[in-house]
Image (cartoon, rainbow, N blue to C red; front, side, top):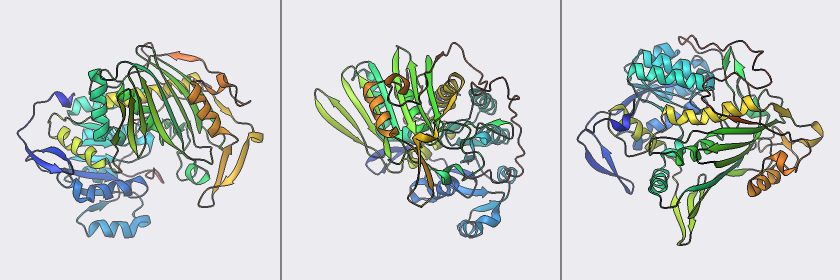
Length: 452
């Protein structure tokens, strides 16, 4: 269902910050949140903020381990929030929608369960671990006729919507190339925080957790969105090449370089790592025919052209705009803002699936790894010289193996899309793993599954 094509309802205009915002007379969306710990705690705080109240109301939460969150549960109950111990019980509450900050392998089954119960869904990124799961979620959404949005919060930034409109208008000419880099140190604490971090599968369902699919996913999704053919569509890759590496004792990769070819033969080169000591805040650079556009995460968008340098602000908390957009989709209005639909999010999942099917995960030899400590004193495995190597690759638009900067790199093949619609698994084990299963008992959460 294309919610932006639905007829608008009469509405009043009120001021929110410096923007004019359209608000209907409809009531706020009544939300239930799956989980109390980890990112779910952040989500519930966002729903309780005064800025969210015109659009969202937190009614209930659930967690299978309420004994671990006794003080948090009491705090929420004092604010009128119902706290239950299973997702099934959550779906039985007087709610309109669920927010799902749950592990990746639960995105599809929990979305399907919510839609079957008549609840709209706001699901955290990525949409799912495989395009098979995303397609199943699209079918479930269309059967239910309810809104399903994905929490790629960066694209809900007002400046991002303005930028996409200007790109589509032709103001900057055609796209020539895109580069993306992000280096976020993540060590033992990060990979041991739950039982799915860095995993291929859990309980027979795909997880495919990696920097490209999870922590840094926003910045791979963003250029696909910005270069999409319309306001409400992302660019689908034509081909993908990937180099995947790991320094940590995990199944999937913690370091990667991806080359994604978009329609018009526009190359997107992305470099991500968690195996580093130095943090490099994500930056997306779009080289356009008439301008260079720099998206500097958590700071601003900088547009450099012959007319000079223009800066567009980025908000520290775009979630209020995400909730406003969800509100309008739920009430079947035509949102002027961008929204991360399942179709948009599918382009991101397609990209990371193709990379995993094309390239094996290569172990970085031990002699090139150092074990240091993070700011909290936990072990942090870092690859010698990885940050300058990735920076050089981005500057010269080369993959690691092409740049010949590290002796352990491995060449990558290129996988053309050509109607690709089923994820077969990591390339080294595509024929060895049994088919994934999708059923999950939603009456309780499996042990330790709720934190993200």
